[in-house]
Image 1 (cartoon, rainbow, N blue to C red):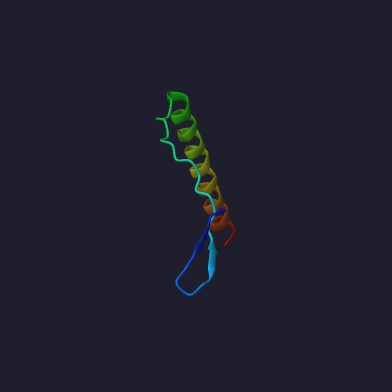
Image 2 (image 1 turned 90 degrees about the vertical axis):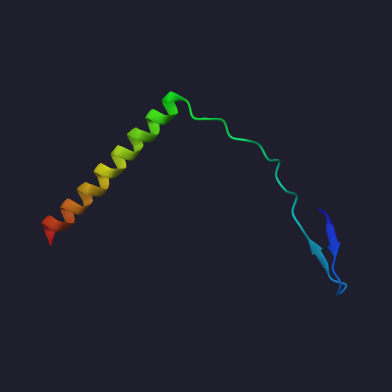
Length: 56
């Protein structure tokens, strides 16, 4: 790990930065999976709200 000496004589230890890369665009099946997960999540939240309203 690289050490840096600041003006006061202290040593600072910095981690190695990760290699950067550009993400690739989502495929059609990945987009479809995101939509399915979103719909299931919305249904779950709506169901939980309906149950809480019913029980209160």
